[in-house]
Length: 278
Ligand SMILES: [Ca+2]
Image 1 (cartoon, helix red, strand yellow):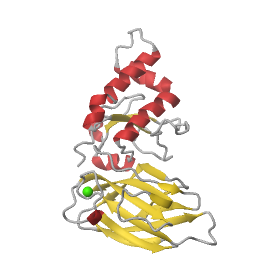
Image 2 (cartoon, protein in one colour):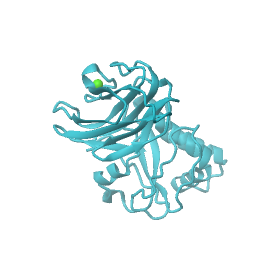
Image 3 (spheres, helix red, strand yellow):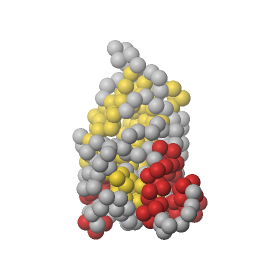
Image 4 (tube, helix red, strand yellow):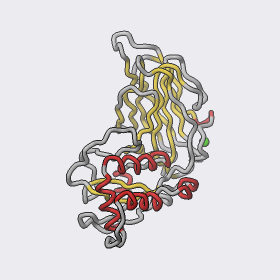
């Protein structure tokens, strides 16, 4: 199913199970599918927050008798996983963390941007996989000019929910919505308001890159609505959709919003999610 989604090796930091024992379902459950940008951010975040762990990984995967500085060891890992060549090909490697049985009971994910605060990894977690990015194109940037008064509070599909605070733009990692060809999926978008007693009227839109060409075309807009309350609707996956991992963009804009997924929103939020189509 995930042809570009390979488990290159298990780091075996505390005797992990063999790679063959991990099926696609477990992968999907683990989530943590990153874009190229996020994978680069993951490396930089780990270098900043967990440099000791990175050195440990170098020592477990190299001839540890070599005398090198820690920064050189980390540089070598970067050259292996995040080289310019890999960035160009859209196939950057990144570490994913979970406990030894590949579950993520705390819902903890390593950062995906060096500006994110360091967070404490649950003690029983370890680096369980070196993954390869699955989205090999960059989508057009979008964000709101102002997310102070209105924002996207939550996005749900088939009961799986991502809730968040106000931001102009969020690339959501650590959660993937599974979709199936020719099937309908129930979605709910809930707006957040600075003054809940006086909610704004806003436009909400959703696009999914069904053909995985890296752009959200107008016929890939799967929802458009206006209101002040939760938007409930179904999305049908077209039979022509390309199976694999793709991107879904959600936008809410009290300025009304735009059918063009790349036009910058005024008052609200834009969120991008990964979906898998099977
Ligand atoms: Ca497209």
